[in-house]
Image (cartoon, rainbow, N blue to C red; front, side):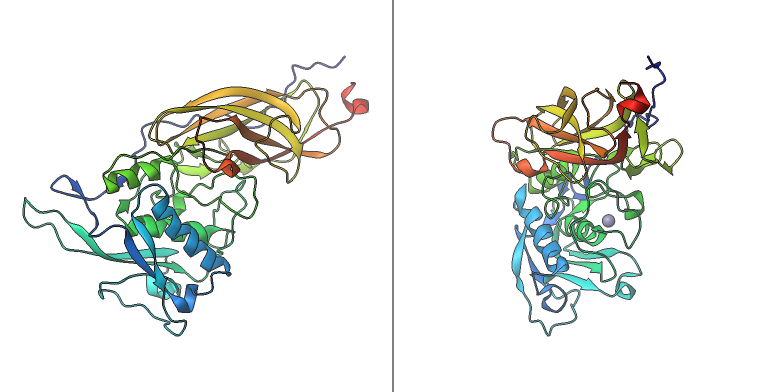
Length: 369
Ligand SMILES: [Zn+2]
């Protein structure tokens, strides 16, 4: 019999801190600065975004609809003529456009906002116009949620840049939390999980929803929990995925394991609701590509209950022991799924996340059983 205590610990655990700054917005005389009339109407630039079948067109639809999902702050205000290949700042019309990076100081995205000012102590300040722009050099396809976008050319970065800029357009400022509105894209922005590889990984998180609700000012609830394989490494102030050892910043090799050995990785469960919520979190091993919130799929590795505070995200390390019944000599991934969720749960498709870490459990000839 082999010594099963010689465990292969995959990832050094770095527990995220809780002192990061939360969702924020500007205020004038203690009142949030938000669009003058809500929902704010966005003119979608026909030249760069008019074809909604293109990845960029889909990104614009996704972003604008997200401004309506949690509080009615922004909505589609029509598409301009396809011949209109420039936008004007200061014309009291809010535009969304894809532009050459030269027009946005070489940045991935930029939002120019006009307000009516905060001069007197009885005044409220309003956003009168916001023009959100993202670089034409970015990839606007749906990202692979297992991997963080770390470079300008990364798959899906354009989609989340556009969502981030639209958050600014309605009044959100930067945050240091697990959120789309993170302080600069160099800090990286999280994708959420999903059973559909083509939809739904670029959505606002709980911290963003906290900001949107405060801008709107009327309490409301959006009952949705989600799971993601990404997490906030607070020490480095980076969003990470499970492909990297956060202690060394190096890519993890594909792990070779035997039954009885352990595997550790991070899981994040998010809550968009205005109330604390809990869910049963099931972790399982399966071959590449599949991901489902249905119970009983693959080889179960762990089952825990996660309680997540309102409009928040909770990251915890999962250390699982490889069971003898797992498929051998095939590449496996760890999947995490919410198999029970609170009543009224929306968006079941984001209740499953595929981690980036891969492993192979060797056959009985090598492992001894
Ligand atoms: Zn920003």
